Length: 438
Image 1 (cartoon, rainbow, N blue to C red):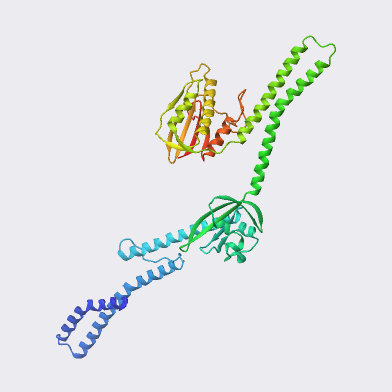
Image 2 (cartoon, rainbow, N blue to C red):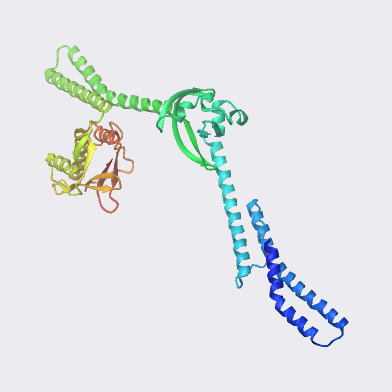
């Protein structure tokens, strides 16, 4: 039996007792038969009418809510039901349904705006993007991807990755760099791959970034910097050598020779030897920087390593602030060299601000999430705002080579870590922070 019919039957059943009592009293009243029939029909009409009214009052709001929910299911969030009140049960249901419709409308508006923004970003970025289903058929592609493959949406959608020359992109580890040739370009590309779900089905999304132009620009800048640095260092040595050589040639050509010509010759040759040695040191430093060997990993006790490095510094005492016991996989010799360079710089900075030797340099460590943090603090003058501390061959020291910190950062990065320098925010001095994965 339908719900409407059950409501009607309940309405009739509710009025049955009263109607039967009315019929009994009417039959026993002694009225004329015609009057009894007329009143009986009237009582029956009222009884049935009230039952149908009850059915309508119950069913109509439910049908209204059903139509409203159907509209929401179809994506029409503009409809609202009247009679929303919080002081009765049915009105509260209507109020909640209206609130649901408004919430869904706002969510759909937000989703549409986010989708429009995402499509705009995907269309504008200079990164090719491809989405593949579980059968390696392309289901999604942006404008950069279409230009790279030289095809339109209609020609690409549904094609297999192997047909497009992208099968290699769906295999192997990511991110990685690979060399591929495609209709829209060839060269070196950075591959990144991830997963997403659409309609409950797993898909793969592939991003290809063209590295050729970037690598060429970086290579050009690196060569320019290298040539500028080499030219500067070579000129620093050759200019005084050439000047002294010209002076010595002029002295030797004089007739008669001046009385102090031997002293001048000796001084000139010493200057030439000094600048030659400086040039040799520069070439040796450059060679060490360019030929750092790969780390030989082993288990290293951090506390033992830091205490040993602190003891190697003889110019002033280096305080070791104890941390938790920890061992890491690293190249002990390379880390030792890194810490020696950093501590040496810290000691020299401290002595610059405290010539009397009352400065302070301390080294400590702690565990931060999944990383080991080693810190070296000094109370020197700190870093200049325009510091080039990590630029190779840049130095503010009279006899510095300019490769200590550059080599140290290279060692840190070879261990998948980082080395940073920052001034103390509330006191003089600088902190060097080495972070290494555990």
